[in-house]
Length: 264
Image 1 (cartoon, helix red, strand yellow):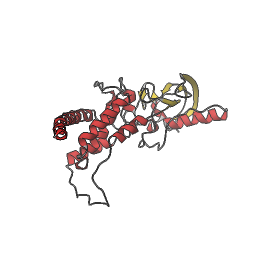
Image 2: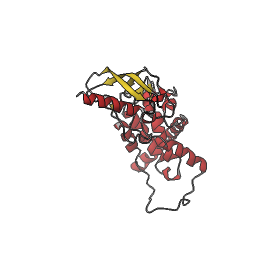
Image 3: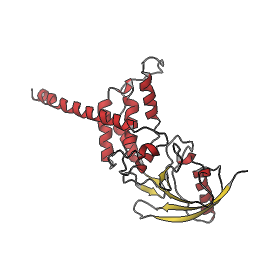
Image 4: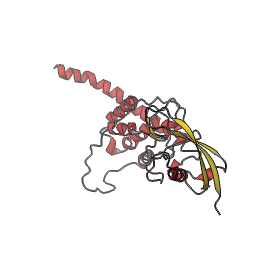
């Protein structure tokens, strides 16, 4: 027999970007331990709708821990108390009967609140767009071994590619840095042979866009790694920083040569 519980929720409500916002108190009754956190919110919203009240707005899509759409700060922790778990995969058995739960959106200037718990993560999309594309022609399907990739590089690239772009790293960082996200996106192409032609330009452009979006700087608090539901390592940030420095040095060395060519 599944355990049921009654909970008190303190939920951030905000009508739009310009609204100051405030916490509102809700009762979540008859919640079973097997419900996911989002299913619990669904139950609360059904009750609000039945009373003719505005439901709590929150992001969600696949509810399988894959898409990165869900993202709530639960009792001060992005995605909640269970490590390596997205909000949609967090189950209510992690909480005790009678618990009080504070639910907030991601807190970062670069993630403005659209409504309640929904934030605008378009900054991430623009960073990815700044990275451009891979110029290697793909054409039709090619043999799997047509272009050999060292196993170590393939494994690291796969680790980086696990990033789902949820933004927990930003929400956890005291500086609201997006370095872990950007580092993962830079690395999963930069580690592969197909990503080499644009490697230096890609890291310069993506880092520049990250700064332009207003994210803070990384000062090695390591909260991003702790909050990441895919457990992406901060070692990728060090790799990105090395690539960025090499890229900047190379671009500066090219400037005099270009100047001589134009003046000749």
